[in-house]
Length: 498
Ligand SMILES: Cc1cc2nc3c(=O)[nH]c(=O)nc-3n(C[C@H](O)[C@H](O)[C@H](O)COP(=O)(O)OP(=O)(O)OC[C@H]3O[C@@H](n4cnc5c(N)ncnc54)[C@H](O)[C@@H]3O)c2cc1C
Image (tube, rainbow, N blue to C red; front, side):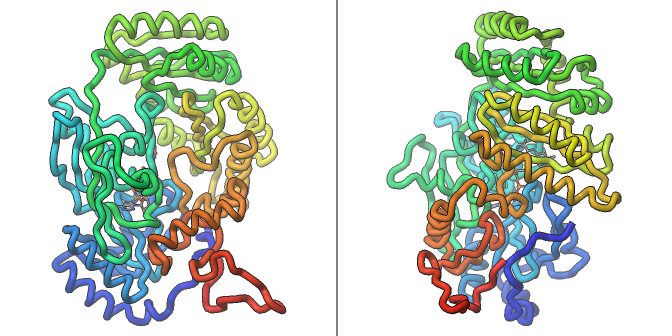
């Protein structure tokens, strides 16, 4: 796949590479600077594996002071920087640039403080999402947002992408569980936002930073809230003869005032792939499968199971199993959690989309997706965070078949446009990165994008942090609000356009 158009490479940076590497070694000594091509290969892509690019140099700092000095050096010398956590982004957010330092935060891997009284954990950004829960689980606590990649993705990356997971319907996304941040600005200045308390003074910069995809600063410390594990949790596995019936059941559960701990749906192709892979006992004769997890105290969960069972029956469910043990509940989830690799077994390649729609639009979107699938001649398997309307259509294709990749990309773009058309948004939890950058115009008008760019300019007026990501075209701070073309002459001709 051709890498999407990126900002023009800065030759002045490339030509000084050796000197830059030397200067960076003086800041991060030992093995903290990697410049050999073979060693840099490990960093040439993130989870959006179709795009690859070697960075200028990889820097793995260990201290906040090193991050600060690296950024100050890059700022002074106008060198671009791409921050990276574990590199699991599915939207190309951590894709390196040829002329940019790849600032990898994986050596920031310590849990710094566990404060049970305030139900908060302070951790370095390279700690994995699961690492937070592992640190507190012996005391019966956990960190709620649980991306499927939680074993590998970093908490800093979660902040940058505002990541979610199956339990976010009830317990919120990263943004709802983040209490404080330490960040280094592109100038090298260190700022602290929030703390262990729920509210903070002044503008809500914490919210601004959450989901900023490495464009506003580098996260060097994270404070998150932890929750006490519920007394019990049980899951229902409910089959429906149509996706429409499953979708209506989801709407009715929410309308009844129930917020399940998790509520996920899979369509027939996804069910078949997951069952074949995991043997979770999924029914194969249904069109849609809903997993509803209810948590709380035993009496509450028993009551809610009855209510959900009745709602499901009213919507024509054809099968309903209720987990009788934690092991069985884990088995119900195993298929869903392995849905991506399961689909990987039935197709040489797949393209994972991420869009969000209002829940009630699910039947309409599914019907249109089926039409698009016929139009493009490509199969699609669907898994959804059904409760919050977040879709993950997996488009199956074979990169070795001429034209299939391009068709998959077009199909994916049509799905995202459809999400926006029905009142939804381009991304649920995977970010914009390079993948959805060029679709931002379907969601935002020029004024919206200009205003977002003004925020970017306030933090990074030289556009050194993660350029080429998120914003569909160059809006240089220098030209904000005053772009006039005179007799065909482009203003600021030195500024690269992509
Ligand atoms: C199999 C699989 C399943 C997934 N499932 C989910 C899921 O269920 N839910 C979900 O939300 N996502 C999911 N993802 C996507 C991905 O795991 C998340 O986006 C995750 O938060 C990325 O974290 P990371 O540490 O890998 O970040 P990276 O991929 O390294 O970087 C992601 C972005 O964050 C920025 N960044 C990283 N660290 C920092 C930092 N310290 N300071 C500033 N910016 C930084 C980067 O510049 C980049 O823009 C999945 C990915 C895979 C491969």
